[in-house]
Length: 65
Image 1 (tube, rainbow, N blue to C red):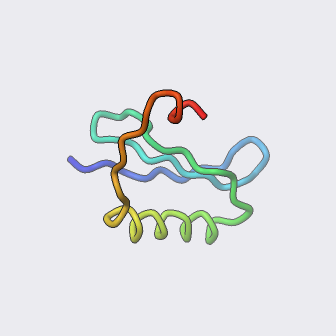
Image 2: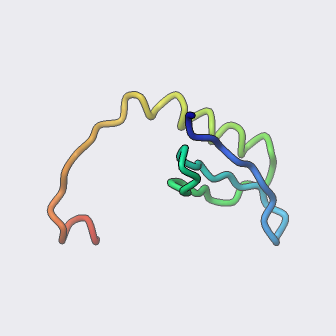
């Protein structure tokens, strides 16, 4: 089973999403968006750009910065 995006409203009424892995673990959480439309646009951006994202190993000190 593939992962899934979940869209929800937070306590302040903003729209957010989280991306869950197939095992249910949350792997990405979004910043708050004022509208559902903006939240959906953020999801679409991730869907379009992620296939082209580079994977880069960084030293631990740099990863913590």
